[in-house]
Every structure is written in C-alpha cells, then in structure tokens.
Image (spheres, rainbow, N blue to C red):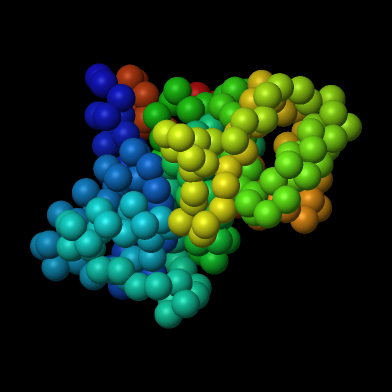
Amino acid sequence: MDARQLKIQAASVALEHVRPGMRLGIGTGSTADEFVRLLAEKVEAGFEIKGVPTSERTAGLCVELGVPLFPLEEVPELDLTVDGADEVDRELRLIKGGGGALLREKIVACASEKMIVIADESKIVDTLGRYPLPIEVNPFGLASTRIAIEKVASSLDLSGTIDLRMDRAVPYETDGGHFILDASFGRIPDAEALSSALNAIPGVVEHGLFIGVASEAIIAGPTGVKTMKNRGNQEI
C-alpha cells in the first residue's frame, strides 16, 4: 500500500468523528488534503459543517471542492480540528509546520474542543526531533532572534543547524508575513523545556512543538488503522 492510500485511510477514520453542524478546523498538508477531499464528497451529498481553514492553501482546496468556509473571527470556538503532523510521539506531542502553516494551525487547534491528528505510521517517533523543528519568526531582528535561539538550544544541550527556509532565491514567507527558521536538532529530549524557552524569545512568533494540544492520533499502517490516545493505548 502506497503512502497516499495510508493517508486516505487515516482521513477516512477521522471523518467518522465529524458530526453534522460541527464547527470544524481543517488542517494543512498532504494528509489533510485527503481529509478535505473526503469531506467534500459528504458536503456534496448534503452534509453541513462550518469549516475554518488553517492556511490559504487549505482554503483554496476547500473552495475548489465546495467545502463551506468561515473565518475564525466569525466562528471563534470550534468543536473539532483535524490536521496532520510531521512527527508524533507516544505522548501525542507533535512537530508541525513543515508546510509553513504552524501559527494558524496552532491557533485553530487551540480554539477547538478536540484535535485529531491523522498520519501514517512513518510519522511516529520515540523522541521528537528527527524532523527539523520549524520556528516562525518576525523578519525584523532576524539575526538577533537566530542568536537567541542558538543560545536557548545550547542551554538545553541541543545542537544542529538553524536554517532560514527559502523559496527559491528569497526567504519563504508564511500566510502571516513571517519567516521560518528550521532547527535540525536531531533529538529533543525535553520538548516542554524547549517550548517554554522559545516562547520567551521576543522575535519568535510561534514554533512547531504542539504539546498538550492533540486529543488523539489516527495512524494508518500496512496492518490497518490504530488510534493513539496516550502512552499504553494501541502501541504502534
């Protein structure tokens, strides 16, 4: 079974959690795209939801497929968000932001009563950090912010390159007009400490550590789909 089929399986199970009339946060990324496609089929058949997209990319796909959208300002409290992840550990801590939408993704997820993560089992890790950690930063003071991040990393015995994400010859710009620094730490033993330290840096707008946000993760693999809720439940 190829990777796309696994993503479709996870998205299909997540769709079973969506009830008519829900205020639904709709995530960003290749797995979330499959969820949007399945959701659109139900909407076409008469299923009603109020969708809130986490990125301009997702909004574009929803409009193309006929999924009704509302701004978060109109629907500030959501019932559920369904989104993908770059990494998931067994405590349901996540790294997100590979697609550049981490700020809006975190705002929408935290405005929701529940967040369901959909992924294939290649995204499961014992310790976060295999995937570079995206850190969304204000363009003003970029060099100073990078130095502050390096100092925080050193204080936590983390090392590795911290690279400005590029879009061809210019810095990649998020939907909010910010830049992204990708921190290749390799392994993050204390994600909570790193999260707190990054939050204290003035130039850091947001980071891709999602801790205590996800309610459950629906993980697809060659042997089927499993649900992770906490350590000890449905070990992958």
